[in-house]
Image (cartoon, helix red, strand yellow):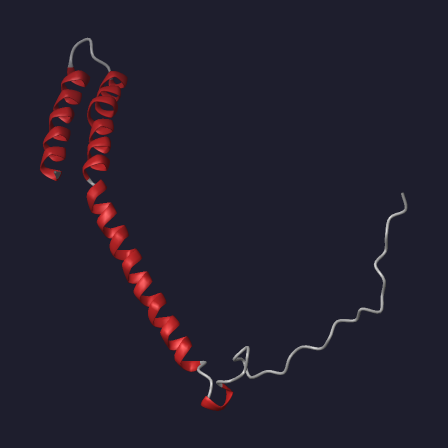
Length: 112
């Protein structure tokens, strides 16, 4: 892929030099020739042909992150395992239930 890009840029540089050194050529015309006939198509070509490699790297990175997350979850689960004596607790947390909420205050209603 890069060989094609290098060859195409070589051709466009030669076209740019020919445009700039022509008797009725200009540097602006040479710059426009290089940008729109050489650089822009090469950038598009490299982007399109590099898509499978980018997808492969993204897939590998996501798989690596998933493995790290799974390992962290397994470590956290092993660290928070409860002793067998608390196995019968309904919420399995080993903490006392929370206090009852104060229901002595009546709700405020809007007058209609």
